[in-house]
Length: 67
Image 1: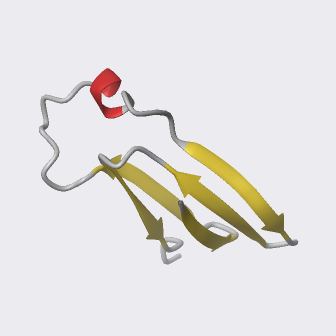
Image 2 (image 1 turned 180 degrees about the vertical axis):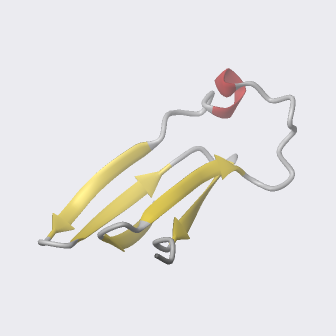
Image 3 (image 1 turned 90 degrees about the vertical axis):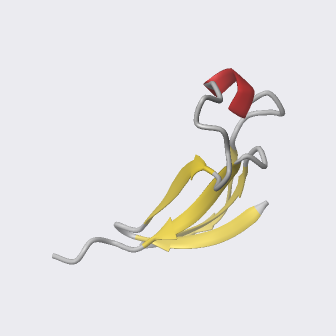
């Protein structure tokens, strides 16, 4: 499980990992289980969450886009 804190306008990105066969179907990607997101705490502008996903998927932190 990856545990991250995100502020307002920040996000995470979940995508197929490097080296994954591009012909893999969604059923193949999720054969070992779903993506599970658990919220551990939150404040006015921040949330702490855990993300658990099949090993074929990568989870990346993304910063807010510059205005």
